Image 1: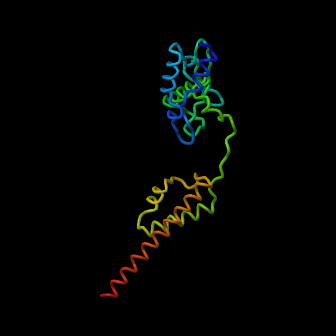
Image 2: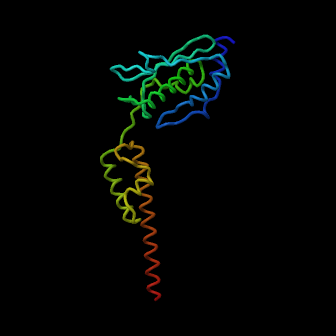
Length: 208
């Protein structure tokens, strides 16, 4: 099998059912990637590079790992920073962080040979910064949460839990709009139910 043939064969494999989402980012299962690679080339090998005996490199810019994957005699390596699930550098990575980055680096090195390469096609494009929640929205959402909590006779944390909110300040502008819309509907529904219940009670009292 020629280099061109193996690359084309790996690049044509559909990886969509084996992509794992963590936070806002997609990752290809390393175990599945290795399995598929070995099916195409049973002689394929990979090596975690060592730096003074350690499987990572510490620099002024952060920590990095490097993995080299050889397919059909062609070695290709990938360097990967040690990041968290938000793709931010980890200042003091532990053994789990290092191992996770090695696995991600392995998958990317395999991708250089074709498998799942399309998943990373736009990775090097600048990230578009989403607009964040405004101070006015924070205030309105807090008021509606408090109002709904009083209407439903529950604590505010319960309402936040139903909305999957931990910190309002972390919401994007779009998320804040969706939360406010949902809260407004919930408040209207609660007020309607309370009004209907009150009418029923008054009707019963009039009969009596």
